[in-house]
Length: 465
Image 1 (cartoon, helix red, strand yellow):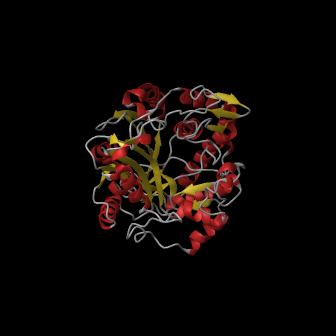
Image 2 (image 1 turned 30 degrees about the vertical axis):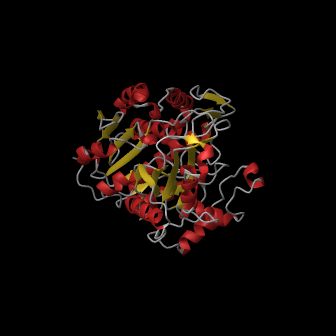
Image 3 (image 1 turned 90 degrees about the vertical axis):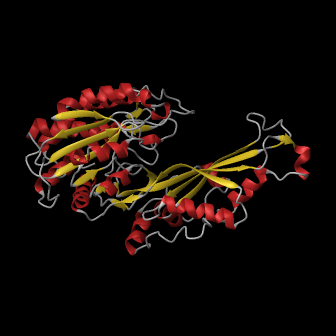
């Protein structure tokens, strides 16, 4: 990564303290903060992070909403009227199986740090604090106010965050937002910027024709809940994986020439060799894969179950009940509430009125303008420091609470390239990130600050308050 454009004072500060910054990043990664285990499981990380952030900001508050872990809100008053929001989350997903390193050991091996959450999202948490410290140490106050928000339940749907934003909207309102970061390429040389996140609708389909399991000899008398559910699920997609729910694709924005150029420049996501041998890919055409990955909604049958637990190979029963869990990732302008209604209508029309739809999670999609003033600044910073024009992805493949900020506030959000790569193992075993890429993220954040400090188009500001 080149340092073209970044002030030598800022670059030197990072380089001189590189070991210290990396050690602190590793320490953050060593603190377990698995939000799936409940708010109490992230308490130690929240407490440490609040103390760590205090000297960086004028004030750090610990806020909470229904069911939430602490939402940390820091503010550093700038000399000008514009306001920049920095969003991160300090919680992580469960470690899971398959690790060859301690998931919370934050081991440093051959220039890589291995830890759960090392990239998602503790690199962003610490890199932005380190960038703010570097600026203050070398140049004093920023010419815009920084609002820092780090939540602890993002990986479980951000419960309580809507209420926190509603109650503290005036304090959080900003002219633009640097969201949590996006990918850089596997070789680390090419940046990618995201401008939105997919929505998600997660449902459980339940078929329950009997009051209790019964002997399978009765299958000639009673209909099977499991068979009915399997047929209902099969009716939702065709052989090419296209969703058959009427109207499902109607709200999706038209595919543009700009989108086609992005698809042509974007490497196809890495796939497992075994998946290719077993015919798991929907397409062998790289551009077709990228288009499905970035520009189309996805349908996923996550699990199906019927019959006694743990007796799959022994029981000869006709199950009373069968369940299937489905998650559908949505593109901008698709509405999860309307989709659920369409799903229920489809099941009735296809002859499955007895299949109940239980909503487990619904997050609307969100998208921001890739040509906003903040976006143009981030694009320029990436071009300078990486020496390559960044790829622009309208939405990232995953989901998150961005819609809360874009719907409750007038806010453009940008996801700059960070520390993670497509092969970083995010949410999988042996999640890792390169030390050099972490330091790059600190420098990129600083270059964005530099460019924002020099521009007169970043926000008109409502006053720093």
